[in-house]
Length: 108
Image (cartoon, rainbow, N blue to C red; front, side, top):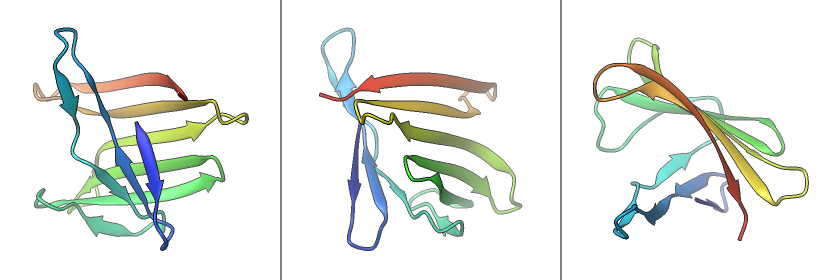
């Protein structure tokens, strides 16, 4: 997982990895505009993204429907020493079941 900061203070998150079978996988890059306002999510009609920076080392993002209901989100926190990233995200899976997961990434 990689976050890139642009000149406007927005973040682009890229995530890629390898499956257990050795196949490369990558998520569609996600843009975080940490101004607390709703921004349309490209290619996903009816959903918008709302992002904030509640603390200097934390980025929070949510996906919301047009009625304001939150359908997913994540909090990304960099450790004080900058060596790890803790991600807590939640949402609704393809079977319409709510989920929450937490992962810790070590910087390489």
